[in-house]
Length: 472
Image 1 (spheres, one colour):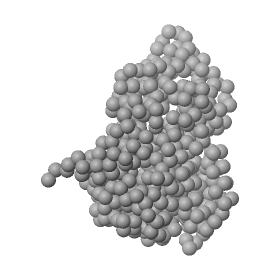
Image 2 (cartoon, helix red, strand yellow; image 1 turned 90 degrees about the vertical axis):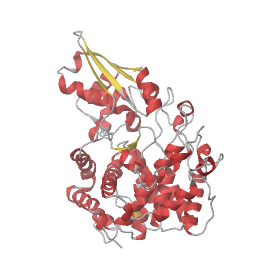
Image 3 (cartoon, one colour; image 1 turned 180 degrees about the vertical axis):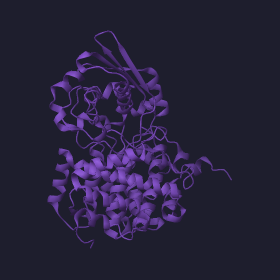
Image 4 (tube, rainbow, N blue to C red; image 1 turned 135 degrees about the horizontal axis):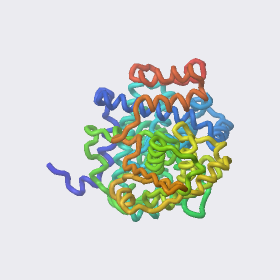
């Protein structure tokens, strides 16, 4: 029997049932392995993120609050109340802008799945299998919700945000780890829908004349903590609306969207794994800059010239890049993640952001001089591909004073599932971010534990690795 339109407009119960019923045995082995890779990458970002000033400030504020020691901040070893740990780790997971992305346009999935899942798993003494199952459920539900409520490109120009949708990754993972029944899961989703951050990215500080970029970034810390709190309240019997996604007044319109694709909420849920389309980042920068950086590196690898020989650099890309990524002289490490001229300049000078950005480069006059030579123009075909196909192509042309012009175009940047990073590249990234903070021995032990998660009897072992203290 085919679903009627009315059936499609009532997806909440199907989502709740999926979360309640999924078990580790239902998950294909290749999906389990991919989630472990996502976990390893997210942990690397959480730990390496402490290098930036905004991350240190967030960590200090929450550590000063103290409270019941329930879950670990992986970069510092501090143990905080579970909601606070979820906030800090989620913020740190995204602060470098080195964390994974989905379909180029729907945020950074792991930032609101892995940190709250690890925090609650540590508090409850969950097994590795329980953690992996919770993460799979969370990814699959959250990505479908994000797909279903995507606005039209025109509406996205007015209202844009990721954290409001990503709160459902946190609540789904925590509900699964708390082993809530279907009614309480539906309560938790209703509470989370009412607690979701507003879609605020159009006031992030990227628009012309509105910089610097705000340090709250995607507000993932709040989304992770909000989802966690929603599940904890529901566990106690706190009542939330049980139909948060249903009907013409459902979450899709609450989120600021002007349309809803109803089948996407539950289509192939449990049989097709969207998480396998999550892309890893080879650079610690906004994903929208990656095609241009790939093109720049291609030029460098096949040509020889000196910086003083460059007369101009022309980047052609989609409208968002022209409008929001053109600031040539960023004044802090967060703004630098969104400055295409700056990023191309440091890449040409041999400091590719493939191991994170260096704050000292912000004051380098050579970088500033080269960045001033970068011009960004609209490429209509790239803009169409961005709006209609969620693609992020770019071309880079470097002109030399001798009249030579060198150009490269990249349609699918590295890290995309169609142009993936190698396992070796991702391990190099993990070591580059984690070893400076934890040291080589702890980094190695952490890596071993993640690869063997399905055999881990208590997630608290990760806390033991990081701090050297007993689990509990």
